[in-house]
Image (cartoon, rainbow, N blue to C red; front, side, top):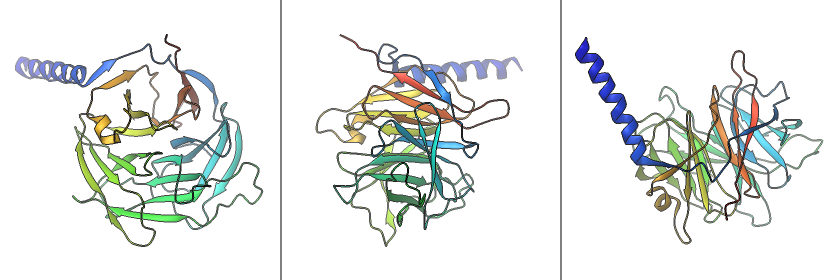
Length: 295
């Protein structure tokens, strides 16, 4: 028994030491999160992704996890509900993340929804739904026809909860979830609407349980979220997302949430938001982490 306890202590210490060499703490970049408000729509009870709106400044999109209707919700920066929008020809098998960004029409802004969950490895193919971003106050509350961007993995099925849309190249980056070192895949632009595409595997990064992420509007900063930490990379000019991820991550301040899977940048770059799913005894609150002004 003593040997087992000692082995457990050594294992935990090794994991902590490994994480120390994988990340560097830098609490001066951003302040700890402050609650902006409670998510007030009773329809939002399993928020799995958030994305700052481009078309509706100061607004934030969110969606529920698997098995619900194909719909997205618009709220303000204090959690007040501003509309429910249905994807006309979409489905919600297992939605896990979302993003806003550019797309095929340079005069339009797009909303991307990642149907990438596969908890038991049961799905052979996956989708990114792309739709022109709805306008707040649209009484129709139904989006335009959704583009189904279908893909498979080159190495079998995977469970993923993180989608990044690169605003500079329009490429997608998809991260697996459960492995000790999660895999990173690229879905290059232009993504075909009719045929399934096989993703390009780029490699792995030394983190597990990546459940969300986002790229800043100017493409220069990357956030990834696990259940207990937020990771940050600064992207150099001319560098790809994958190249940036090869450097050591900076670990940012984080207030743990019971089921925190959602993160997004504020579009002006002044900070970022996180949001948790509701759990027993916990109401979902929107947190904002403000960027510190460092001379």
